[in-house]
Every structure is written in structure tokens, then in C-alpha cells.
Length: 101
Image (cartoon, rainbow, N blue to C red):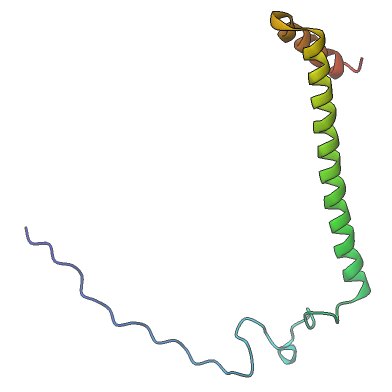
């Protein structure tokens, strides 16, 4: 059995693009509805972006609050029930919290 590597292909030639226009940014003359990038964005878009940032920060703060509360409860429970009593106490605590008590 004689295994020969496949013949080498010549490198592909890149298409010539105009230096006046970036190939990934369509010009406004061709019907691009997004508008120019940068400071010319509308106030509604800026408010939308600011609202998204605030919502993300609020979500992070809520998750941090839940983790902190869980850590405090876990620490207090482990201090109150040392040793082998801890796991049954943790199960009772979880069931009590889920039950709304």
C-alpha cells in the first residue's frame, strides 16, 4: 500500500475591496437602517442600554444577597448543631424554609 499525500492547492486570492468602505459595515446609501455607530445614537437607545445595565446589576446584587443569606444561615446552623446533628438539622431547616415557616 502506497499512501501519498494529496497534492497541494495554491493559496486562494483575496477579493479586492475598496479602501473607502469597510467590507463588514454596509454604507447608509445601500439602505442600512441601523444608523451610524457612535455618539449619534438616539436617547431611547441610550436609555434602553442603561436599563439593561441596571437590570444586570440588580440581578447580580440579588444573587449575592441570596448567597450571603444562605451562608449566614448555614454558619448559624453549623454552630448550633455541631457534629453528626448537623445534617438532620440542615434537612429540617431546608424543609421548613421550603414550607414557608
